[in-house]
Structures are given as C-alpha cells and as structure tokens.
Image (cartoon, rainbow, N blue to C red):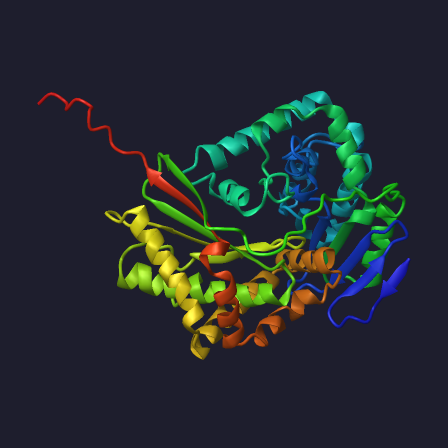
Length: 438
C-alpha cells in the first residue's frame, strides 16, 4: 500500500490491488459521501456492441452474490440517503451520500457488487434491464422533441467507427443482441479495483477511512489485464460545414451547432470554455443579449445556449443551441447564430472575459459546496487526470487566459470548416385536410 499525504486538502492511498482511495473533509457534519469512478465509458465500446457501459449502470443495482435485487437502493434510502449512478463516454460512476455511521454499510455494498456481481447475474436480470434501458431510450431520445440531437451531433463530429461516434445509450439493435456471456465478460474486463477511484468525503480520520476501504475492498483481486480502448486520435478541423436536417414533430425550429475543440484538460479547452461562456452562459452573454433580448429571434433559455462537451481522450465539442421564437424560421435563427458566434474573432472585452470567469467559477464552487458534489469532482480529477487537487485548483487555469487567447482560437476554430449543424424543423401542417363542418 502506498500513501501520499502531501496534498493540502486531500489524502491519497493506493491499496495493493490498485484501488485508489481519496479522502477529503466534509463541510457538513455527520455526513459521508462515497463516489466510485470506474474508468469504463462508452469509448470502450465497438460497433455492434454499443450501450453496454450504460447497461451496466443499471445491472449494478440488480443484485450480487450477497445482495438481492433492489436491496442496495433500499438500504441507502431507508437511511434517508441519496444514491444514483451515471455513465459517460469516459467513465461510469456510482455514488451515495449517507449519515456518517452508515459508511461501513455503503463500502460493503459497493465492494460486494464489484467482487460478486457476476454471481447475481442471470438471463432474466439481463432481459429485464435491457428492456428498462430500451424504454429509457424511447422516453429520453426517440419520443422527446429534439431528443436525438446529441446522437446526430456525435455522428457528424466523429467518423464512422470512432469510439465517440455513438452515444452512451446505444442502439436498439445492439441492446437486443446483448447476450449473457458477453455481459459477464464485460464486467470481468472493466470492473476491477485497479480501474476504480474511491472518494470518501467525511469528517472521519483519513487513516480510519483507509482501514475501512482495506477491510472491504482489499481482498478483491485486480483484473488480469487492463482493457484497451479503441484509438480515439483525431487531428485537424472537423471538415465542415456538415449538416443534418430533421423534419419531425417539434414545437419550433431548433438549431444545434458544434465546433471541434481541444480535449478536456488541454489549455486550449480552457480557452474555449471561457469563449462558450462569453457567447452563451448567463443572461449577460452575447447570444442572450443579442438574439433573445434585442432581436427576439430565440426563445428565452435563461442564458444556457453554449457549453463544451468535455472529452478527455479525443477532441471535445463546443455546442451552441437555441430554439426559435414563434414566427422565426430555422434558417433565420441559424444564420443569426453563426454570425454572432463569428463576432468572437473580432474581439472580446476584458469585462466579458471577467464575467465568463465568474460564471464558470461560480458553477465550479457550487459543485464543491456539498459533500456529494465534492466527492464527484475529486473522483473526476483523480480518474481523468491523476490529480485530486485539481478539484480545488481548476479555476486557476481560467485566470491565465487572455482576450487575445480567445480571439486567436476563435479565428482558427469558429469557422465553417470546423462547423457541424443539426437543424430540427416542425412538420408542415396538412393543408389538404378537410375543414371541420360548421
């Protein structure tokens, strides 16, 4: 076991099986937040086998060797705790916030499903959760206005066969083809202590937490070999403009624009993160002021038109999306958005950049303000960057960005050759339909 106690706000330990443990003090007394980040996301999936990382997010709550189906949720909720999980391209995480006295229970539950999930797996469980995920896809993607926007964006932004070409939800056909042997092998290849970061935020002594983690996780063996993700390297601009025009049942035209930017963690990512805040985060942003307030072209989104889709292992995407106001066409809105985005290359004021920094730092500090958010941010910093202190120091990265930095990257990246567009337009009214009798 290795120990690193040099960090100012965190303590780090590595168990002999490779599990990385990070502890940090909680701002709320008598509360423990537990967060497990596994280094498995949809980027590990291959064509024909999409959706498995997300499917496992569901399967991990369906019972293990010593816990019956649903008992994990029940045990935490009976304590008044919070419990959930999420999946992205780069990771899957599982988290609980409970009274401090229940920390042992949560650590045991997490360790048990890591070690013995395959013992509780059956064809019936797989069939049931596959249907649950397929229904989730129908509700959140297929039957939701603009619900397929992200999938269409990814298909335009990343070439066929690229590990970021598909969304985490996967396809219906791939989910139908899931078989029990592959599911069991997926857990064996990706779920091991050597592929996990365990973060515990509480007011317990760090070495006490370390001893508890050793008690529950220490005997779980590491994976025989680390799984390899498909090559995600991409160079250059997106090769645009590329577009996808969708006509379906939506309440109003919707425009979704994307631009390829640097991977999450690169300095150029930080520059474009600030650029997105100048453009479309907050009611002081350019898009809100110009297209919502002054010109009345876009519906009021409260100032949430732009952000970055952060990918650690491949170029990320800057996304800008707005919905048209009544009487405004998709063409008119899209043209106005592209023109406004282009103004970044003409200059950014110091005041705009300071406002953007304040917006991003506010959001970051809000995430750290409660134990669960702090645990999640530390887990992300450790799993993706091997540096838990980044959870506290990340805003310093924005402080070194200048207006010239933003303008320079805007001139290079916010251009037609680097742009994708997904447009939704409502179906035309059926004018041939008979008028109702008077």
